[in-house]
Length: 340
Ligand code: COA
Image 1 (cartoon, rainbow, N blue to C red):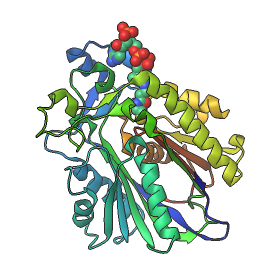
Image 2 (image 1 turned 180 degrees about the horizontal axis):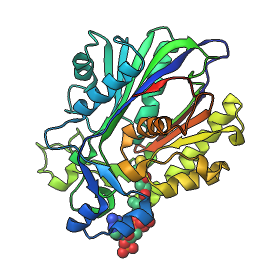
Image 3 (image 1 turned 180 degrees about the vertical axis):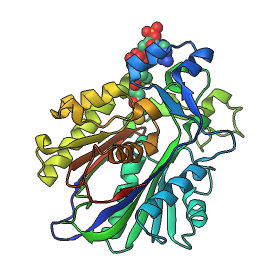
Image 4 (image 1 turned 90 degrees about the horizontal axis):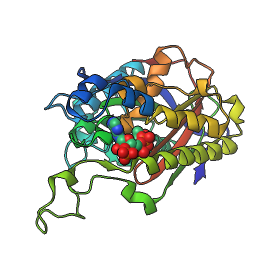
């Protein structure tokens, strides 16, 4: 499904970015000490050198508050009408994490809710907040992607434990005109639940009830069929990006920066090849943070802005893919704004 706000119409504009990473760095060498893996395997198969894992006692909401506060500061705003928090690792199964995050940020009684779309969560959350703004239900929004995957990784599963990291990224959106730099120009969003079993946490929901069967403790951990996920990631992000670019009239050659979901550097390279975009235009920060799921897109974007790679006036394509399966893409001309 592709939806593009009509030209000259109300749109959501990015006003500020904020990020937060836990302090604890976990290197490939550290993981190799307790898992049957090596730094060489992890770097050559994924591109990841290190990731951050939160200390015990730090929850997703804590990271979200830090990133959200920085985004609000960068946008010089102390109030928003809605907080949308994308996460796979909420603080509790109930209630959502967003209301507590909004309260801790001093955002009063702002509408606040979580979005669950795994690694596509930030794009789905951007689309949701953007739609509320375009519909006139909100003038401003704080969109956060935050995760603590370290809490759901099976410490004995080398194929997932080496990939994921913790972190949070956030963006402030305000109402403006579609012609302004920073306007989210359109979205392509989709899902395919036929492949829901490729990425799962089997227990902890209503499907596998603790009162019926004694669950296997391993079922509370994240599981992934990596090789199949790899192929889906490239084709789904590729097709979604193409659909979006067609709708907004951007030739792929005009894209200055491809900010794809940071799952694996080989996925990003294959995605660039699929789109016929030069590989050097693909933003990469997974070497330092790993796959941070819903936090991946804002962390990569903010990093590229901080390093001066993405500059005002550049054409930026964002595309993500995740469990569900889910995927989504959006695009914007980068505005003159702060990243904090
Ligand atoms: N260290 C050493 N060997 C490992 C390993 C590790 N950390 N993880 C897996 N292996 C082994 C496997 O056991 C397998 O061994 P076998 O051939 O003896 O069975 C071998 O490496 C190849 O496994 P495979 O899964 O085919 O490797 P791969 O090249 O596909 O790389 C991933 C594995 C997970 C890195 C890769 O599939 C991937 O990145 N997938 C997508 C992940 C992703 O994007 N997830 C999030 C989507 S939102």
